[in-house]
Amino acid sequence: MPCRAGGQRPTAPTGKTMREHFRASHRFLFSPAVWRLRLVLWSGAVLVGLAAAAFAMGADLASGWFRAHAARIPWLPFLATPLGLMAVAWITRRWFQGAEGSGIPQAIAALSMADHRARARVLSLKLALGKMLLTMGGLAAGGSIGREGPTVHVGAAILFSVRGWARFPRHDLERGLILAGGAAGIAAAFNTPLAGILFAIEEMSRSFEERSNGTILISVILAGVTALALLGNYTYFGTTTAALPVQAWYAVLVCGVVGGLAGGLFSQALIHTTRWAAPWTARHPLAVAAACGLAIAGIGWLSGGTTFGTGYEEAKGLVTGHHATDPWFPFLKMLATIVTYLTGVPGGIFAPSLSAGAGIGAELAPLFPLAPAAAIVVLGMVGYFAGVVQTPITAFVIIMEMTNNQAILFPLMATAFLAYAVSKLVCPRPLYRELAKAFLARA
Image (cartoon, rainbow, N blue to C red; front, side, top):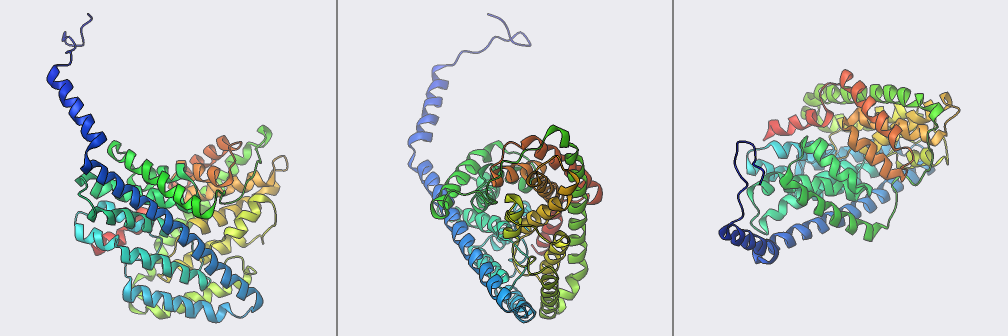
């Protein structure tokens, strides 16, 4: 028999080793304690799916309500937006401090916290419920925010909270449950299971931990199936079969550079403006919310109402080719998103960023007459999104899943990685990591 390195022969399994292996397998398959852990985890994942579906329906109703009334009463945003955002900001600071902003920074901060009590405060069920209701309130007031980042916070909070239902191993308690909850939140919010897994790996943990993979996969599957059962099987931005001809591959270079540059500049602007405004927001939160609300109403008026809310309808229309937007739309959408973030109300930047990216793609489309406009819109979307979040793998997978278009996979990949490289030159520090520092400082 050939020897291993060092001259040692392979050791044959002993009877004791085989018995230990059999006992371990028996415990894995039949142990009541192990099955209790599984049932608790699965129940938590189903709850994440239910919460994500309810959140999606509530957010759509809130955003639709504002848009319908603003279209009928043009002056309404100048009254409703400042007052509404003031109310949401006051409730957030009074009863739900820690729920402000996207929610992804909170989940990232919780992964780094050593104090269990501090982590429990950031990921409490009370905060998760407040996050959902107040994000809906911000949308009902016309804020340029999304529900997807907050769904990550909600998912992480729900799965972290199930630790009290059973005695989980320490590793799962500290990282696995939070990562799985965040991944399940993304998967259920966008109906993009692969992107949910990749986002947990690429952004929230920045590494793949073998002991977390089963927890993440099962949570994503159960949360996604639950959300699908309630919302139906859908693609977030509809379906497009637009492909990029070989003769138009130079669009990858343009969309990658322009999208990455715009995304990096947006991230830098958001980081610096939130820091600059922090003292003012701390001393005069309601005055800041009112002033920002008036600015958002003015931006909305300039854009013809397209910058209010998530931007979902505008992005979907551009992807499917059903309508065009004003040339200034992507830039006004970026500005409205930054100003809304300064108010301190709960709400994410995922959907607004996708919308702004689609607008950038629409502006670049006339430069490439050999390519379908929808293909350039999708490339602009992935370039800008990768530039903002600096997670290129998640970016191209989430766009591919949201548009149900695998024909453009390789251009998406190339654009995302090019945009990521350009964005790092402009904004060396990842946006969510920088925003998470504020929550770590409070711990």
